[in-house]
Image (cartoon, one colour):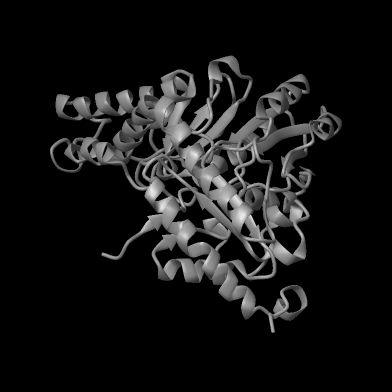
Amino acid sequence: MAKIVYFDNNATTKVAPEVVEAMIPFLSQYYGNPSSMHSFGGQVAYHVQEARENVATLLGTTPEEIIFTSCGSESDNTAIFGSLAALEKTAPERHQIVTSNVEHPAVRNTLAHFSRKGYQVLELQVDEQGLLNLEQAKQVISSKTALVSIMHANNETGVLFPVEEIAQIAKQHGAIMHVDAVQSVTKEPIDLKNSVIDLLALSGHKIHAPKGVGALYIRKGTLVRPLILGGHQEHGQRAGTEAVPNIIALGAAAKLAMLRKDTELEKIKAMRDDLENWILTNIPHTHVNGHRTKRVVNTSNIGFDYIEGESILLELNKIGICASSGSACSSGSLEPSHVLRAMHVPFTSLHGSIRFSLSYNNTQDEIEYTKANLGQIVQRLREISPYSEKYFPMQS
């Protein structure tokens, strides 16, 4: 197999060997239904509960407040549809939703649905560094607000949002606070027992568990109508027989993340900063999209002026380097990133921005390999760019 340097961990992560090892017995040996009365099913239920406890510990909450889902998008949809459905009964006068203008499609497109249904959806604006204006949140959130839905870390830039402070504002006005934490769980400390956040979504495949599993935190007392009806599973919040092997895997990934957090995050940050600083120093007309410090440790979104990001990605792909031009959930779109547009990134680099997102699987050798090749790639592409004669005159 050709050399692979994987810098696309915000899209998905490699399943950790320890996680694979934990889930294998539940694909063959322990196949009982956790809802069954017999002990064969009961021992499976025990391990599902153990996984739930691991996820709860990771988030600083109780197992009773965690339900398992199929992915982060389902968790977000359950939080939004379920809380608004409950509020239609208990607080029908609340027809306003507050969000940001840089949310992931799982939230952005869901809220567009509610806008078409008649809800007033108000978007908080980010500045040129991708930061949210807390003062604007104070002005917009009111007694008319039903739901506030804000991501913790942006999936394209890694920029962190002040979700705890916004949750306090929402609480003052009696609104529900939902946080999409898919990109921040395991990268940033989360302590829900000391928080007023009501709903928080996460995804397994972003934290070295397999695809097909996620979780949703539902604060005790928060009314959320189920998105999937049927049986009693997941405290009556999500019907359907549990995907046991994936749930076990998510629990194992949560436990592994807690063991590694004190050693791996600094290593990831050091590699990210090394690559980023080298690019800014050695490749002209480059810049970081997003705040340099108020972001998760693994993400660097770099703007390369005057060339197409897709061209860079194709050239990197030829030598085994995997990166991204933005959200993997929007990769089929030809439109420039709505996140970068919201940040007023100049036209010269709007289409030429690349996201490098690292994990503990990356090595310094991979950073050096990228440095050795990236500059040449950018130079070649700029030489054939339609902007080349205007911005990069050829030497006679």
